[in-house]
Figure 1 (tube, rainbow, N blue to C red):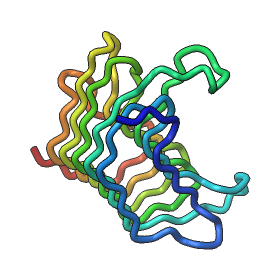
Figure 2: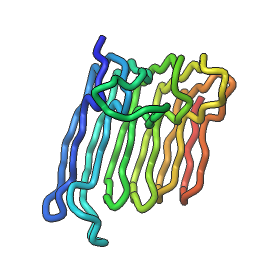
Figure 3: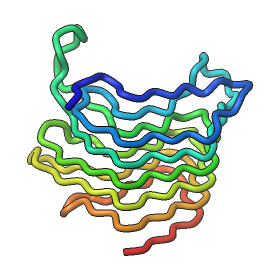
Figure 4: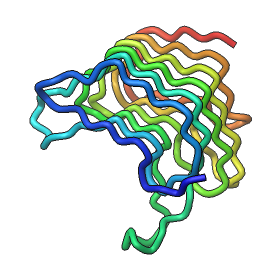
Length: 172
């Protein structure tokens, strides 16, 4: 098991597209994000580009912040963070398992000003032992096509949409 701030951070440059990315077999506890797809430069209104991303076999939960961070209090962040000001093509997130004991923040978050062609969530499970509600998936961006297959929040809210989703396809 690893305890880390961020295990995987990919940063999109303005002039080039990140394409054909696979992130697999991530195990551990994280006091910030487990996986971050982020905008790299100062926000200028120009979007970064990422396409054909596969994230799978994630076994993770939040951890307490270590003193070296020089911050106090419960700073918990989503395990998978899809930053804004990025045009994403296809993203597939599958086989995510979260047994959360500490942080009551969403498992997957699509940020404001993120634009996604297709986001497929498959076999995503979240068990909550915090005593506070946790939303499994939160959308603040724009998604053309959201595919949900075998999503389970075990009594908590499966998803919250504050953005735009044009088409939802749900299998269970």
